[in-house]
Length: 105
Image (cartoon, rainbow, N blue to C red; front, side, top):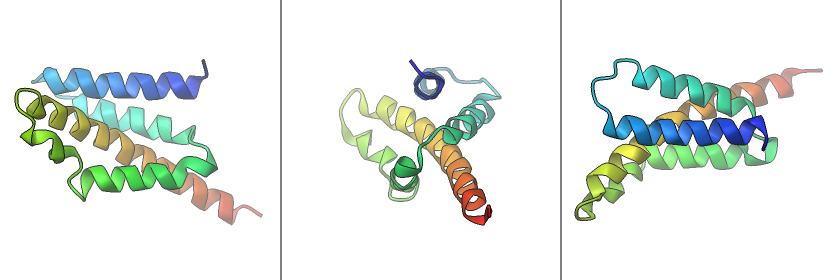
């Protein structure tokens, strides 16, 4: 298993864990750091999909769409909200990496 897959698995698991654990002050910072590092390992072919997924979950309200499911909707909304933070940070890294690749002679 590659380091990229391990990072993405850890990132998703952290999003799940922080959905159920409240009061941890550095949860957002940890999710952002995991996302920034995970974004470095995104292939050029998958960067657009990553950015679209982040936009969908954050801006289009994709994370909150789960809220209407009885009993588990609240938890799914929290999980995907946290994962949206990971994807947003990973998107920033992917955008920066693409910019540097285009500027490189």
